[in-house]
Length: 222
Length: 222
DNA sequence: CTATAAAAACTTGTATACAAGTTTGGTGTG
DNA sequence: CACACCAAACTTGTATACAAGTTTTTATAG
Image (cartoon, rainbow over the protein chains, first blue to last red):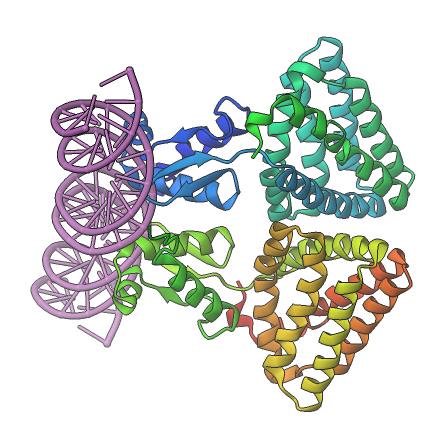
């Protein structure tokens, strides 16, 4: 009566996904199904499943009978991911603003408070984690799991850029905090239009640094 | 110097996808990797790849070591697909309305004209095809292929409902035509808000018939 | 030393064999 | 007839072998 439901491809998918968005596996780098299989002590079959999913997400490209490569960054792909994310986040925040669910609002307030703490202690990873939590709290109100999933998957493309920019540009804690506060404030005021505006501005932040980052890392872009 | 790039899993993916959204393979029906492999004269490997993609799209569910089943319809999934589609279509039409690209507008006018013809001749499939073309024309203006892809994949869930409703409710040519005209008119008037409103109403049509269809086909719903 | 060609090593795509769990059908017993 | 139990047939997950094309390396000729 074992209901396993977990496959061997899930861990390797999670590993590769995390390594790619954290830029520890660099854009353009070659992956080997055989090496990965040996590394994880499994056969090529589940490795190929994991890679197939990453291909669907646009994070990996397979050149037939030649090799598997981590996708390079491209302004087009990143702009597109931002567009999709913005469309969904805006639609979500509009629903939240109209419903003003107490639970969600309180959760967001708590997260913002924690973010202020993390900012004060310069805890970058914690701050980023809380950023995700803020957006996921809003998304979870809609109970639309798939929408949240798509956002997460698209955000992978944006996170690669953000993590690349961390080293040189640094985390702009105050900007993000102000924007989160603006979004929450608009929600509380039941002002869907203002919430839309605030969320739009927030999700477009990445575009402001994109050109600079491309200039500084031309080898990572296609 | 053969650049094949096509895999044997693509045809079977296309086949299953088409059969599922056209409801020729019914919700809840069992699929067999072995049967499909024999049917297409290939091995289980590419069949499994195709099925894995369908699982990602929510059209198929795999019960481990027990069977593969076409997903049943569910109000939650359908509502969610509608939400995602609406968010993206609205974001797209807003861009089009602000830019007013001549090519796109002319294309849409042509499509609407063809739709009027198809409606007059009661050509259901042609009318539906042109409906898709209308939306894809708007999407292609943004040059965001992935956004269009996501819309198409989410629309699969909506098409199942729509095709189910065709038999009893029938195609409401005039409603759709009026809505397409309203969208295009708002675009021409550079009125993004009106375009948003028109697109929202258009994409929400499916929700109006959802309850009735569920009542008439309880066995297809989970 | 350079250039070219052949061969060896890798690469992914596919077929197939096996493992392990689930479902189904039948058989025997009460 | 009803029910429990066992076996056979199916199911998906995984490992592995092979096919076919690409890349790299090596050796040989000039």
